[in-house]
Length: 441
Image (cartoon, rainbow, N blue to C red):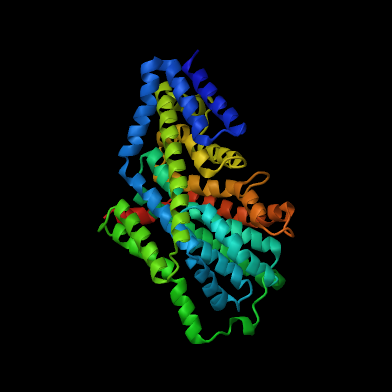
């Protein structure tokens, strides 16, 4: 059997196993080790998994994962995120669509605390959704805002997805984080602009709060502002030393985790239940990511050994005559298709051994492509019929919000995200300017 056929067989077998409900790391790791045993015998097959495990344990920046995840869970479980929404409620409730705008702001701050879109979705659905519906906001507007805003968690630093991409693509985590800052803020600004225009045209979609609900006095407003900005203080205490080169990435992540823990203690919200839940969730998610990375490295090693990347590059550029940009667009479309039944981590692990080296062969910047991949994952999360965020929202939404409402709610936001993706593709400096300014000194 030719190496090309082995590569196709590996990929198809892995997809079949995933469709049958197997765990992502189990399916990918199993296919990688079996292929290695078939190609190189007992010695090479067994060494493959061991070598991947050693690479994972030797990759020092991977220690940031549990730190950032723990920080996010502490801030979430201790209800510090509730203060954020109360602040937006009082300060922006008088504007038409103000609470929806505040929800986008909440999601940006949650993203800066956690780095996972699921956390933003959970907080938005439990805190913002009931409040917005109670105040007669349109249910489709509300569900679209929460889904779109929560997707920012995988783009705005400290994005856990970009840490995984850095591991697989062998790119600096710091540069990838900085590359996600301006596109993430740009996308949040585009969401807010859409809400403002839509509510200006149809005020009933996001009615302003009556004065009695938001007139709480200047002293209370300032207290809420101080409480709501606490997560920002934690974020900057972590990121400023790192960007200025005073601390390493791992040290900054430890600062963030300690700062979040101390904030919960000082606000007298650090109970044993909060601590235990945060530690358990941190351990579970961190272990899941470790296994996925290990499987991805093993799968990538086999693909490298087969020369699959060179073969596909030759197929697209020489046999089919496609330009590099046409190939890149096809890659993004395939991400959107896979996103209908896979999450962002699974997509990255499955295609990274194939796509990332190919992007380098085509002459594109891998830091820039990391941002493109992440934005495309955001779109895939919200694309019917099986977008990941669609079903999360359905599970958390009240009965009066049906799946049809959820599907229709995301159409304008998906279009906004597609415009943001096109902007970053046409103007790469949107993503690359900030890393060049910081690391180009």
